[in-house]
Amino acid sequence: MGEPADHAIGRSRGGLTTKIHALVDGRARPLVLQLTAGNVNDTTQFPQLMTGLRVARAGRGRPRTRPEHVLADKGYSSRANRELLRRRNISHTIPEPRDQQANRARRGSRGGRPVGFDKTRYRRRNVVERGFCQLKHWRGLATRYDRHARNYLGALQLAALLSWLP
Image 1: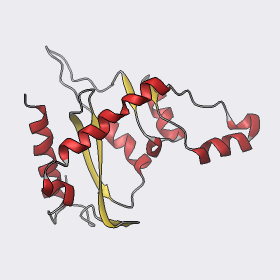
Image 2: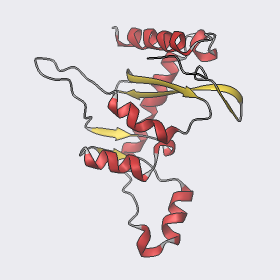
Image 3: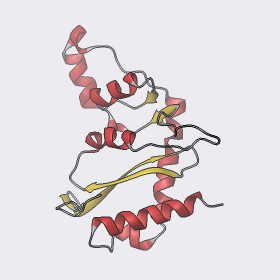
Image 4: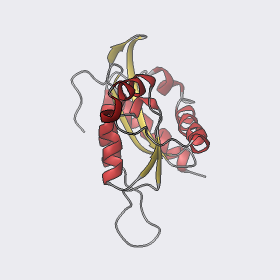
């Protein structure tokens, strides 16, 4: 990975920040990590996260690239992301933000059907937050002491690796 020109630092409401995008398994262990500047929209990063997913099989064979189910928050809600999951035949639970609901309702019958949403399954999304909390136990990661994105990503990957150890 080359070093981004902005070193994955961008201005958001809170000042200069970096966003960590992650896919985690059901036990809060990171599978894919990606850095962007703080002002980059979450939904635009979803295809790259899905592309980076590789889970080794227990025996022989190619790694798995298709999860059984995807849980995501409202930041990843978009028609493009839902279509990507539908094309790959991956079931998902992603809530629809109120502005998207209002836009769909405003368009009437041309707006399409409401998205399916399973509240009981969505409650398990806290696993993602626990994965972030495990990573941010490292003070250097929580406060981003590293100047370069490649160094910060390396530290994130080391912390992720340690979360996989028993």
